[in-house]
Length: 178
Image 1 (tube, rainbow, N blue to C red):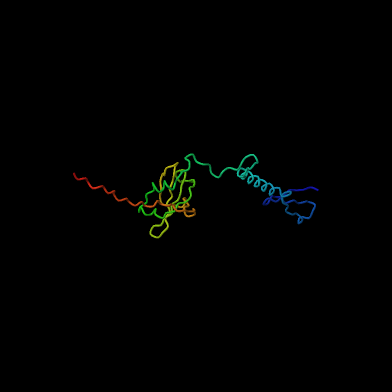
Image 2 (image 1 turned 135 degrees about the vertical axis):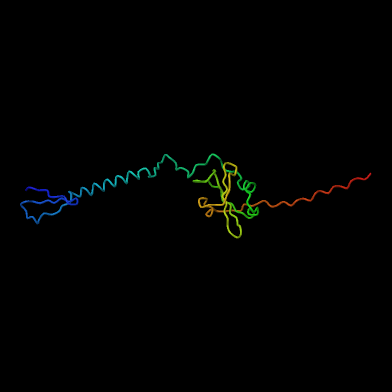
């Protein structure tokens, strides 16, 4: 049996036998789908190589890492007191009845090491102010933007100190007459 390879047409080869009927020539794919299996294997190898560096590598010897390392500036010890003392809003009564979020680390383009959000009302609208700390000092504060995520924070009262009533001047004893 002698085989003649005919023309290649769209990744198929036409095999014909001269002794057989010319109508019996049939298109036949590459043996065992070779081209298809090869392209699938290459694609699979590329996907595996691309994802290999992204797999979590957990072992019994290494403890899980904390979500974020503590920054060197340290936590502001009494950030509520620092806010009451140093944040000056216009009008000043915006801090009366204000609420403050819990201290959290800054992220992305935010400045400083730590931040809290102040929540207050102005003209019957809720207004948020992030306050940025570095160490024990306030760097800056401003109106909140989307990255600050102040709307989703949990708040508790800032608790402004009660205004102290001024003591009347002490009465002086009447001058002595000689």
